[in-house]
Length: 95
Image (cartoon, rainbow, N blue to C red; front, side, top):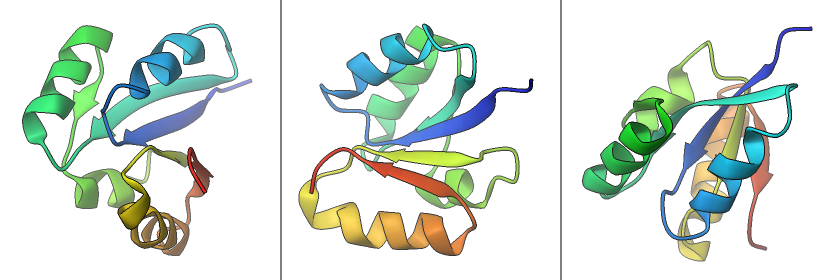
C-alpha cells in the first residue's frame, strides 16, 4: 500500500512530535512543510529530509494528500478551509 503523503503547515515547537511520530507509521509519510517564517520551514526540512515550501505551494501540490495544520489558532480556520478547498484531508492540532 502506498503511504498517504502529508504536508505540515506550522513548524513551531509541537511539529517535532509530528515529524518524529510519523516515522513510526508506514502508512503515512511527511514530504513537505511550510511556515510563515520560511527559516523555520527550511530548518525542519533540512532536519527531516523533506522539502520546504510556501503555504500556497504545499496546498496546491497534487502529490500531498493531507495537511497537518499546526499554525497559530488565529490561522487555523483560514488554512484548514484552504486545504479542504484544495481537496486535501486536514488534521488540525488545536481547536
